[in-house]
Length: 468
Ligand code: NAD
Image (cartoon, rainbow, N blue to C red):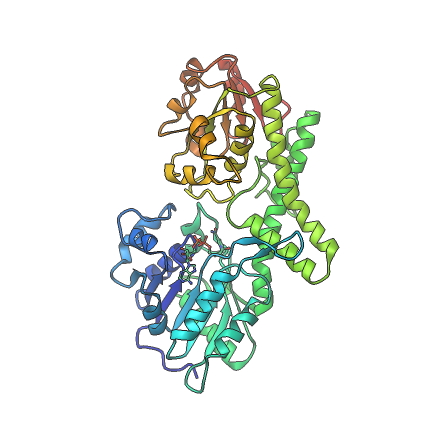
């Protein structure tokens, strides 16, 4: 029975990534009576969490970590020790997609989750509440249960909860401090309900009770996939309309505004762009597609798969527009790439549209000059020298990275705005124009600059979703 908690509740979070780090740092910050230790097998990452230079950039994260680190927040690579001393264990490891060995589809790679679960089963010498924080396919808790149960006995009991994380990178701290909801999935047995209330009591330190909602385990797991699929679907929907706008003279921002005023639709997530990126949207939709296929629901699978197809199409379409505008060839032309992160206010580049666009540009033998205010150069090198993107030789020949947008734009034929960093709205474009080849182009893949101002300066401008 789960009764003998240590006097000070102890939480261990397995996985010190973009989710485990910020979400458990906020728990420590809001719950001084709870000891939180975030562990990872990646020792370098733990070193960085213990340094002045945290491995994750999120507005407000430094302040929170520095306020409680060493008091009730710890980062450690001694995974086994902290698993064993914890009462509650969050499993927040990566769950990437992998090409399924069966058929052509993609499946969730649950190897890290399974390995963390096996670790818990092996080293725990007392009862634990194990919480799925990672995004997982529906029914994953059943596999975790099978692994954990094989190691339980009269003295050691494992309760499993699902507590998916809905934070968005770039606004993670605000999302964690003021969540729209906290979802806790559990079995409806007395033990499941007891475990659920222990976790709820942690969140109740700062989240209003009515925002802490409960569900059965499978609803909770599916809700996370569904939420991301619905968000991505909105982006693909507005992007599909942006193609019609470019072809007709309608303006996607005006269309989005008009539609968004309908309270049934709402204005959020209706911004046309070069396509969504990030580690979650595509992965979670592909999981949903795989789940639908495995449940023998091919039409459902095809429906959601179209969201991903549309996203790829948007990037191809944007690239074609650039090539066409630049007189049908970009060979040996210089392109300034403004932004490499998958969105503003993060240094994360996973599935960033920039990578795909640059892959296309390099295939067409363009030279690219990249500037991003937050992405480390080593990360850009890693992303672009992936054999799927470019050879090391091509990278060395064609790619340069800059610390300043003005330097990046010097001597280029075009600026391609890929990430919606605020600073790109207020650059001195007059100065930039003076140092570019003519005619000078701006391709705004985020519709963030005032194209009338740019046109007045002399630029030729193309904006996603506008026929200009
Ligand atoms: P991440 O790759 O940044 O971090 C995962 C960490 O887990 C890595 O540092 C890795 O070394 C560590 N790890 C893997 N196996 C381990 C083990 N056995 N023991 C100890 N550490 C181990 O991933 P992330 O972005 O933090 O995502 C984590 C999960 O949260 C994923 O399932 C993801 O889908 C989900 N999620 C992500 C976001 C997001 O915005 N990034 C939002 C909501 C949910």
